Image (cartoon, rainbow, N blue to C red; front, side, top):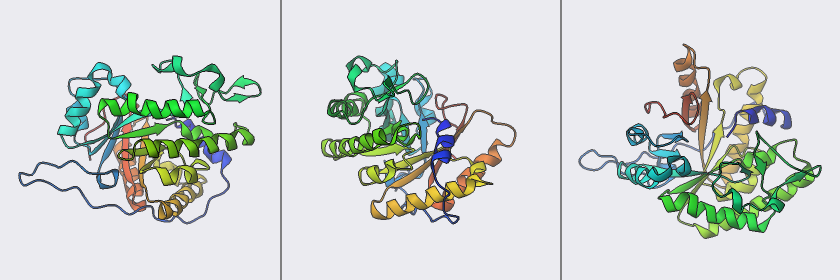
Length: 307
């Protein structure tokens, strides 16, 4: 998940519609037991708060995450404490999603040696690097798709997670990816989505930043979409029409294939006005019917207290 993609998306989109349509309506709140304890939400559609944390284990990690009803974690980062941390979050009434990169392959991925060199996406004869040093594994390769479906189990579900947070698929919308290759990858994405649907019918799936050509492909196969970099300033000036146009697209797709929209904003430059800016982000999100989460200092830091 990378905020630099916002600039890429702005370049590649045409001017958006000037009026925003509301997103999916907020759903009913979760219930409480007779003694006042929170019951676990049944689906992503039931949650009233969410957070994202990619950091490692700490003695206070459960206490910091449990006030949120939906928690996204990286089981690999939690290491040997992953299973007990996720079980403890369940005991506190949380739904838990586990992180999985579905397009980029990084050097620290513990399954790196299983990703064959010939699966890499090639652009101008070279392995394509959409961000940093991460290379892209081709969704047009049936073996990579099959491995991804397996990794959903071994890297996420086997640790007790209820769903998957699918990252890096937004790279398919990168304008630097040649159109012919993009078409191949989108076809592969559709096959991948059908495969994980069939393999895990009782799990939920969240796609991150799949806002353009990826959106209609994934919409029938996701329970929620995360709109990263949902920063208030983007709703001002020249970027405002773009943001509202995206909201209109999301509403149109959700009307055909219902899914929840989660908004996410991290800032590395807090400043004294941060509480006001975060409040504005929540206000804008609520106006569209979206569920917000904002933090500061990166996703490897424990989140703030649930608002």
